[in-house]
Image 1 (cartoon, rainbow, N blue to C red):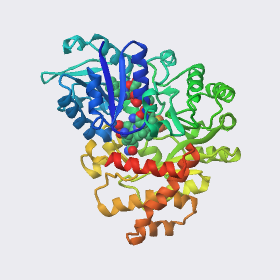
Image 2: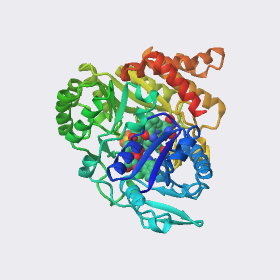
Image 3: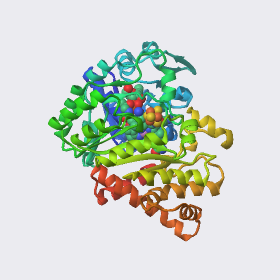
Image 4: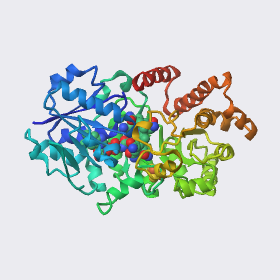
Length: 471
Ligand code: B12
Ligand code: SF4
């Protein structure tokens, strides 16, 4: 029987990998997850995998390619297979040295078929859908099979969390990620969803929700391992009012843990907010991105008006449901006034957790095309792990200003800072600007602490860890 080991650098739980290991195991395939393959190379060698799998997001390309080469050197004959968002949009990453196979899109069925068919030769798997296989420098590309249906999603086995639970840092985190749906009905210019729709055009329904029963049964099981807070990572949790009302009723009865989830401003109304609040929602997150309506609509392709934002916030404030807003700074043409309008709208709506990152125009997205007009060609290598630090803006003074503004964002919202003060602070390059990271970490940490139940001590350990694992 063929065996696959998924390897990753960061000590974080990945739903994609957990669902794939669960699915493969349910179908009789041996699958493991190993964090930090460099340190655990001897364990990997003992397990004798036939395949090494890596789930890849764009900022981790360099690490992934060198890890593939490292593992192939230490495990002669092993086959490397990449999947996840980056290979889905850039399947030609298969051309790189060390990579044998790339899986485009949803991984469950193609991966299973590949592992069931492999007899030690690439000829045995070359008809597997979704795969790009490199053989003697030629690449065989197979077309995609349709997306899993909502019934198939409801029947998938629950995420296999056993591997991650072996790691003390992950076992002891108070919160766990959960998924209830796949797909988003919108097509924001900076998000992978619009490309995803193109890739899967004509191949099934894009937005699919699991049945309430399937989600509740998984959560009941999760509750037994001592989780304190649940984090629904769905792009859009409030897809259907009926689903939310059924879900919240069951959740209250059988789960009852605090949770956080994401939606868009247009979907927030009194019924939704009452249902979520009564079920234990601790924070409802939605995107503003820019306080300038024309940037939001014309550049970010978000059909969200200022009115939608004011109305959503009014309902949330009336019912006392805390909320987080996602904001972004760092568009090449954005002026200081534009940036301040993003601060201002958050002040006006009294955002509980004002969250702000630097725009990351990942290659392949519509916004990357837009940004390249002024900033020139962008490669995946431009991006670092942190969207609080990495900016594609070439001019150093402006880049520094954007980083300052992001670090000070929550402080400016919470402190009702005026425009003049905002400008003075973000343009400051004196010794005082060295305090900005502390201001940032204070606000960021306070938010995570109250949403996910971390202590300052745990957050500090996490900060130290994330610095060591990404440098
Ligand atoms: C939860 C989440 C996180 C978590 C966990 C990350 C993870 N890798 O799971 C955290 C907070 C750590 C995170 C961090 C980041 N994230 Co994030 N994140 C998400 C989110 C919201 C959900 C991911 C998820 O769990 N999906 C559900 C699972 C079931 O789907 P999946 O992972 O895609 O897996 C399926 C397939 O892709 C495939 N597959 C996946 N892996 C593999 C591996 C193999 C071998 C095979 C064959 C198949 C396969 O099969 C799976 C089942 O069908 C997505 C948005 C989204 N809707 O996907 C963004 C998303 C993945 N994140 C994104 C980004 C940009 C980031 C950051 C880079 C942000 C930053 N600058 O700091 C970091 C970098 C993390 C890193 N290690 O590189 C982008 C990725 C874009 C890109 N081009 O890579 C996304 C798509 C958001 C977006 N709107 O564009 N993220
Ligand atoms: S609403 Fe969110 S998940 Fe959906 S396309 Fe826009 S950014 Fe992506």
